[in-house]
Length: 583
Image (tube, rainbow, N blue to C red; front, side, top):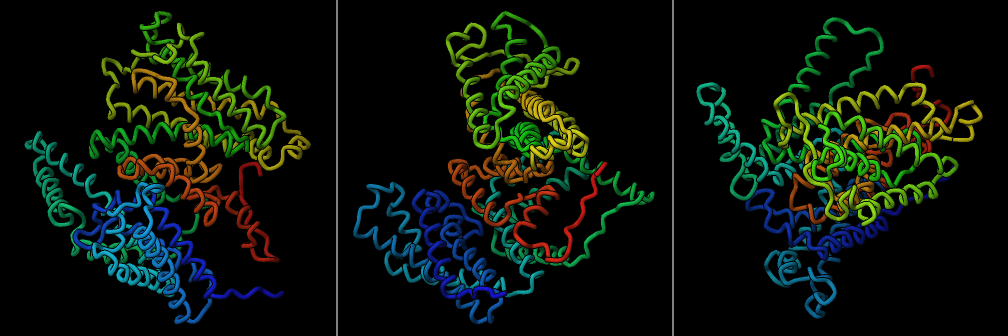
């Protein structure tokens, strides 16, 4: 069998052109300029500089992987070529901007952008740009040449420096509110209050400066994170426990779960109101993601109108609890079963006419269903019952005794309880008889029917269960805002939920949590990126499909299937057998 040889120079040139094109795109959409004042390491480099230099680093690293094995000198030279060409493309943008008014077409092609790209030195600064790009390309290739354990440690340390530099404002805000709380209870906290105050001072005065990480702190953090990662990657992998647990293992598991539970309970108090709001938004999308994961991930039914069930749950809660409409005056807990029942019925109603549809046709019909629900909520015909464009206000709030759950921190616990219940149900369903039936339909519906699976009941149950979870999210959302409006139920909600499932891993319950934190929490934590959220979505999805199509935390079965298709299971060796209950 003959394999086609790969030319390192051709690959390096192509990678350099791609890196330059990516950097030019980031420049022209305004990201480089927007982040030019955000220092990662104070006085050394900004996030804007990272954006137009890191593409050369990443493409040089991937090129080194693609052309391996090659002599070390050839790999380093390929990285150099990639860096030079990538930075030369950006230099061409600067030169073109000197002779052509690019701002007539690209509003962000401003003198400020050209000053950033030339490091404030006008046209002579283009040499610095070429030099910086060359260095990034060589460094990316050289890191690949390091032993795998060391290379992973260096990359992880660099990533942590980048994240800690970006999160400076948020970390300072959190630690500052620790000091305020300790001053409010000095006698009760005692020595713990002194320790918390000292920690806050250390973080804000020693690790961070007024603009970013201090250079010495960045070096120390790089060494510490790198050493920890090097140790972690060198540990032998822990064998999966298959037999009964020993008393010691049981104790360790209980302590670990108890510590995690305590951390989640204390998070709002530790992080403050701003982070509690972020956690509420993440919890909302986790609830919807767990529901859509059953429909799309387990059963393989592409639903693009999933927001409809979210809207039905929210509007049902509004109609049943709002005194503004005057129809009913139920409490939140009294209305909750009726609202959930309405979403289940809606899921069955959607499922009935589309039982024979698959693929693109199914996606189009579900998309139409979502738009129908939104337009009905907007219509003047239903305005006396649903409020039309004015929505519904004064929606009932959940209460526990005399306590009203009306703040971000209180509602966090409601989301936490709902996620715990829904995740447990999804986990139990996954390996149950109905869960295996869903997966059989996902793999091949005709074969599943031939094996005796009732595809009508199975599909309807998938739609009803997904609708139930989405409706639960909608009821809590309505209570959180005290109101509900049609514009909150647009098509992009469905796209966001579907995106987090794809990024987390289709059919993976932990993947839903990972995807929600990546797509929902990250833009809120990195507030400057909020304007470029959908650009980041698209780039992340493209990168995922190219490098990790199974997702960040994939389902084991799906990961094995994808790797088999790519030929990564050695010929002549059977793939690992998954032991599932009843399988």
